[in-house]
Length: 231
Image 1 (tube, helix red, strand yellow):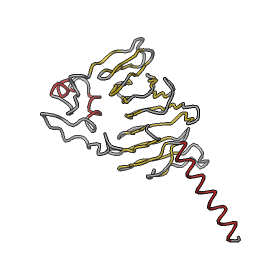
Image 2 (cartoon, rainbow, N blue to C red):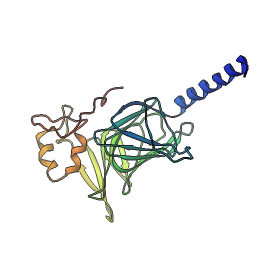
Image 3 (spheres, helix red, strand yellow):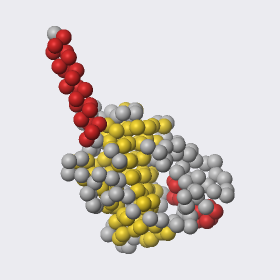
Image 4 (cartoon, rainbow, N blue to C red):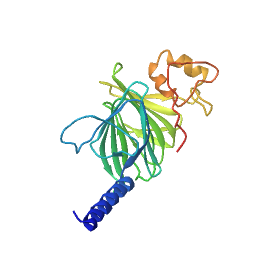
């Protein structure tokens, strides 16, 4: 192979990588065991996800205990939490459309650069449609219940709109979504004593602790999310 041909192929490769980074979300941080199954991989073998790997439609992510991964696309963030099974169902940066699916576990999103209602995050029981907001999506297998909590803006969950400090929950077989209020449980400082009491009846709340540290009480059962609130 001549030097000219080699340089041409190398230039094409660099351009392709650059375009992928502009069109798709890119991993900016990983911790622990994060497995990655690319939709385009005909071998169907799970691989270890690394920083700078690109998340494309059909790709599936699994995180282990204490593990996590952050993806960024411009101002949009996708943070996949420990013990989570996540799939990117659809992504079109030109049409500003995206669909994510949390089979189990938890993921947190900050959404920008998308049309109203065109970014969806689903669980087996819930679908949240948003634009320009921050929210968390959870699915607890033991409870067979999907949860959504709103950190900023408005989120439409199964046809019901929720504002900052509130959220919805839907159990398998239920006909109506239940409403939850988190305003006195989580403040800008962190998880309050009321959060601690509420968690006794709702263990799912433990998934909030990596991002919202206990205030006035202690809990060492979780790994703090060292990138939450940072870019």
